[in-house]
Picture 1 (cartoon, rainbow, N blue to C red):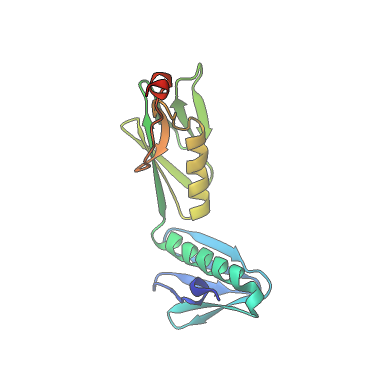
Picture 2: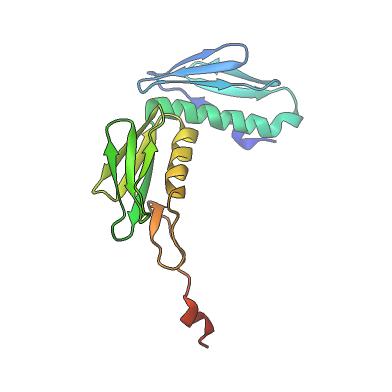
Length: 180
């Protein structure tokens, strides 16, 4: 039984929800998102909340998934999502180049130009803090993961791009591994 799927989704007054055959369109102050609903799952609106219902118990996993995605859409169009990254390393930095790209210097022989996808805002603070924001949670997380993949943290020196607040375990070098 899906516990998450049973929870109702509170709809703020500034959010407009249109339920059609197999799509739910959520419109709010920050933008508009659409979600495709799989067969066997239906969405109903009751006053100021949305309920996600399923036909039978074989759809329990999808039931919870659709409810979570719909809740993320409602949250995204009202407040948005933010993912912060930190650049650690001497000479490692980033700068926003217009509204279309971010330029990274990450210790390679060349700078890396990262294009900013549509619907995503990227800001750079003090050349070492990057904030990725937008209304689509999946898109914000994927862009942040793609930026982190440009130079993942090194396990020996902990240099590279990491999520803000990410705890890294520093490995012991060659000399420390053989000493007993």
